[in-house]
Amino acid sequence: MTASDKAIAMTKIAAAAAEDKVAENLVALDVSKPFVLTDVFLFASGRNERQVASIADGIEEKMHEAKYKLLRKEGKETGRWILMDFGDIIVHVMHEQDRMFYDIERLWKDAPVVKL
Image (tube, rainbow, N blue to C red; front, top):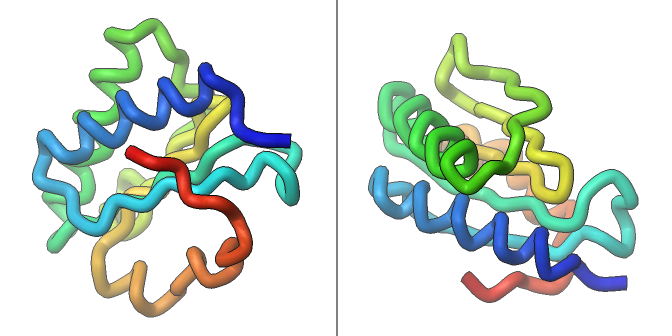
């Protein structure tokens, strides 16, 4: 099983929105095979809490414009790791220090990369 065309389209919209807010180290992984709850994880980094929040806000705004509903969002209060669930994709916007510390991409290292 691979990520759906819809999930890939959603990922590209979210990634473009993150890039507009100067997000760094964008990585999208197709986790549809080992993780049945979603198709794609998108990771993006910000240099500080304010930028992390701005990246998440930008993604939420562009996804809303594209008619994709945000189902859940966590972590906005601290601005260190904001998790956004859009159903077919889950976006992780992380402070660069936390991303290096947790290294959660390592857990999904066998997942294919989605070209952005």
